[in-house]
Image 1 (tube, helix red, strand yellow):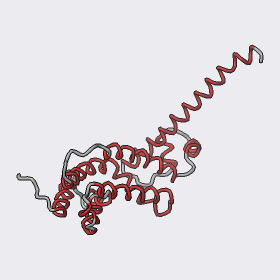
Image 2 (cartoon, rainbow, N blue to C red):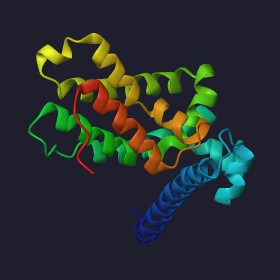
Image 3 (cartoon, rainbow, N blue to C red):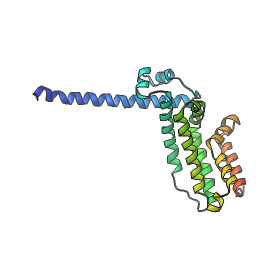
Image 4 (cartoon, rainbow, N blue to C red):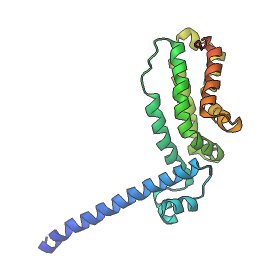
Length: 206
């Protein structure tokens, strides 16, 4: 190998690394743009709108994402990662009722962070196998987390489990926040009161 070829290799490697970094930066900007637009209330943004917000070309969007469904999938992966971190924290309560009530507070915080993205997914998942599968996974895991906190005799009470699954779902949170117009504080209080009634836990004295 000639001396010139040896000298040119670091330059080519540096150029390749630079392109990779720019590609990763562009992908992160595209996802961030999608998140921002959905947070602002556009539940079905176009690829053109995402490209404009990210300050990249439309071709760049589809260089990183095969279609809008895959971009939605990346958006959900990002937001659900945040939710998983919150949900994985150890429980403080030694009783199953106490742990269920802790879930009310945790999910109020987590759902408020991602509810806009859940609503965006509801708009499009009827036509997307990817988004439908992601949603089904979230529903299954959310239910499993509840059931794991229950003693066997309570977990066998199917109407109670179904009620908890409904009350502690992101769909219920979205209904309270948007269709019923409650503030996050009022929505949490409504869920907690209903859950206390269901599990037979008296509210704390005022």
